[in-house]
Image 1: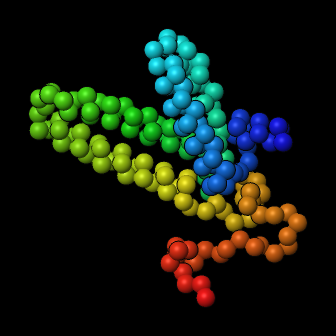
Image 2 (image 1 turned 120 degrees about the vertical axis):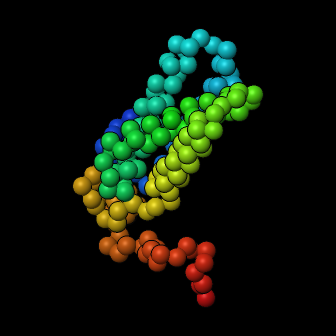
Length: 169
């Protein structure tokens, strides 16, 4: 079990499904919030000492989730860049929103940047949290949701319609 946890958190090989990815990401978010509240006034190097392993884990699980979608793990770099750009942008936007006079062109550029980043972030969330992985094995490994003992695939088959809209009698 411990070896499985090390693989999940630190390896870039293999695939993981949506549920496992969500659990790890929520745990990272909760840990980050707790650390920010606990060590808010600490030195900058202490923040990086704590953040570096969390960034590694985030890259590793995101790469494995992308592998499940049959995408290269290198897309995790793009996901990270979009998230950091959004963080910087919204920090800048809220900083400028309080009393700084900007030209109309700069304001328009900020609004267009906000729309573009929001669309990119929305796609990242849909891709990583809502879309199913590739059925069966793909170039990155076996299907993480398939049971090895079962010759029949018991997973619900996608219909293109959300499950809560499908009538079951």
